[in-house]
Length: 338
Image (cartoon, rainbow, N blue to C red; front, side, top):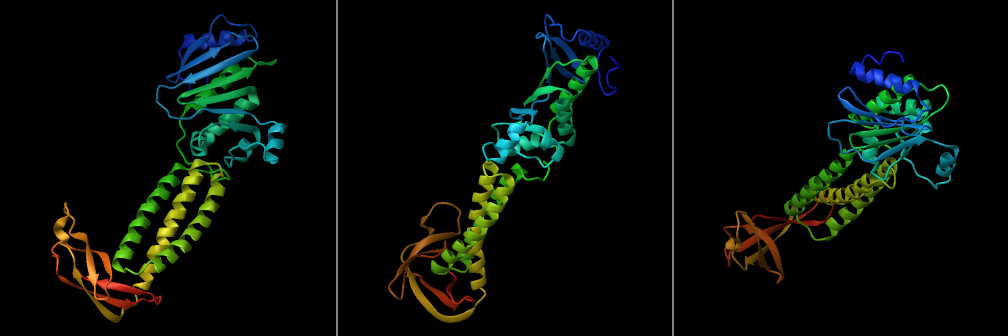
């Protein structure tokens, strides 16, 4: 065997043992060979004369899901073309053409685990060298090699080197291909729902109207958000949990944005139409807590009774006034100061 890669940190004893095993490939060993390479535990199991299983375990914890990589076959390609088989595509043409990715985990996790260019290159080299399967799970990597003529200790070095590279955690974003996904989008979708929810609440309490305008804004916004969500979901892959979260989040935030947008636009109309007077039917300070604005029942001059938010100093019997203004969209809104 030629000298181990210069990037390796391996003892002379372990290097010699690996060299001796390489010279005896095809002869079943009595037990797996245990090595320390670059601080990682490496096991070379050649107890079966026809195969070698190389396992690498890093001491750094990892939440990487179980992923199996194999050579993509013509049958795989045919079944994908017919819609009978689904596989995550990473946007790396050479990798996607050679390697078949199988996992029950979410696409986002799989894409993150294979996000580094070096990791995908290592997987390609392992498959091209003769690896029949590569299993990634947590901080462990297992590479199964079916022996062929001409394989020797240098083949083992190549396999171990590739397994070490794959054992490193993914650190960068996945390629922006057809299957690009990211857990960041889930957080973004949730943040949008919260932000647009606050905006909708502020707009409806600052420029209150009847139910027609918020309903209209919600329907229009829901449609827009759903369309955008469907576009992104298709890019993330239709069966992805991430895609579903993004779709729902954008649909909800779209509806809330629609409500807020129409309420604010309508509230820019300030023409005063009339004043409506009412009487507080209860004390606003009856509640518990530090809120300065409390809901109370108010009887208006037209005989209607509504629940309004009033300052905590409002008492039963106080006269209240709200100004009815003509909104910019033609919908009346109420400017009330109580």
